[in-house]
Amino acid sequence: MDILKTITSLSHEFGNDDFVKGGGGNTSCKTADTLWVKPSGTTLGGLLPETFVAMNRKKINALYAVATPADKSAREELVKNVMADAVMPGSTGRPSVEAPLHNVFDATFVVHTHPAFVNGMTCAKNGETVCAKLFPEALWVGYIDPGYTLCMHVRAEIEKYRAAKGHEPSMLFLENHGVFIAANTADEIRALYTKIMETLKAEYVNAGIATELPVGRTDVSASETVKSLLGSDGAFVAVSSLFAFANGPVTPDHIVYSKSYPFTGALTAENIAAFKAKRGYSPRVIVTGKAVYGVGASQKVADLALILAQDGALVQQLAAAFGGLRLMSDAAREFIENWEVESYRAKQMQ
Image (cartoon, rainbow, N blue to C red; front, side, top):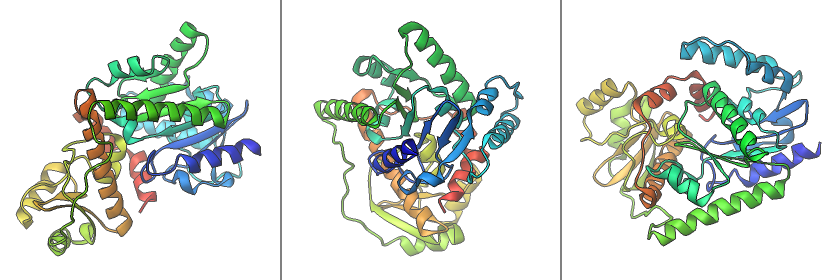
């Protein structure tokens, strides 16, 4: 089918490091009856036409009217089951948690990514004001927990937008999250992304903000100490020179792959134990006086931890152009840390 070939091509095009890291982002295409969406935990760059999950749009539409429990965990479990029931025979994989949101758009193609250039704005204290100035045609949505809650809120906002302007938005910016681009052709998707990235780059350059994270000489002297202190949780390491890391949760992706907070104390067994007791998890990122370490039970996990820590640092650096970095709230952080969907996504990347 031509639209599946097109969305696969777009997925590969926007699956590079400038737009997503790890298993971040998702894409979809649709007809009147069927939505094809990226499976959860997969990479955009690795998608094939046959790996997209085909979903019955009537069943997805029914979700919007479902009475959901007040308890967050019970609600998300119900939604997950409804979405599983909407998967059409012959499809494998678990549909992206954002599938109901993709379904809200009328546009044939939807490409959702988390570029550092974009998150320099969406994670900035003055992000909403800047967005209104730079992209007046866009829809901005303040931070909402991903999944069903986000979908329902965005659905209502899109309806308001349609009522006011006579058409749906082609650009949707989500605070501390990323951007959705929706259009009927691949060229329109490309043109919109080009506009966004070039506009934001110009803003950073005009503000005197470097658009790349400074990387110096790497010191690996503490590698064995890190491994010995963390045991199986730190059996593998990835090392970078020091950088101005973000000391807190930047976006859900950063929490999933790098955890919410890095370890920054002296490398002792007592300090590592105290960190675990306070945070409830073993550190995924360790900052010493000479280097930054991504750590994990596999090399892939360690590499992703460092990559996302560097991305968070770049977002923080860029956000200085728009009033400085806005971290996620404790409530938002805790939802992601305890959300089964994100645990599933992280496991798929191990």
